[in-house]
Length: 282
Image (cartoon, rainbow, N blue to C red):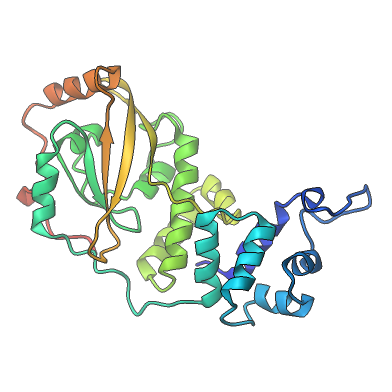
């Protein structure tokens, strides 16, 4: 699903040679840095770098990876991703994703904001009442990557659809590096690549993103624009799942919109702990 060679190639192709002291003239035909330039700037031999990029050099030291990260201008998230790819770590199996019943009770306690529990594949494992009203359906079983790329296009629920697609692809790239032997993740990525030109283009860029908080805007058919703030909380049980809470600023139009949405929804939307949730999604 992901490989070191592809990641290194895309990272060096985006580095401006002049920014690292390499003169550029009209005769240069290479986009970004050459392999030998990366090797020289990183303090490793060209042969070693070529073997590293081809996956033939195993267990590079942290010093080498740090040097490569510096030359390629990697941020903290990309540096971690580079380390996982370079060391070729493999897990015997993906996280179980088992949902403790206590977490369902926590979801039901969140009454003023949509809240979801999501796994590393972006499957929604459970959601509270307002989450169901926001999505217009029972959120459990929804895969947000599939929802964004294959179901909700530019004029759908996501007001910042293009930004959402960047976040999703960046997240899935990270997940592929952490769980390279997850067949369900590989199947999802293949499905998205087959069904979406934009996904294929973004996936080829090999960008990684770890979004832990930020603005999330929805265009709801009943209450209009909802500008919310998303916070992601990793669950401390090695499940690979996160709790996502979408809150509205006090006194904001979004807060009024959520209150109206709750009123319009009546008592029809199921709660997180109801039996309609069914078994957990692994």
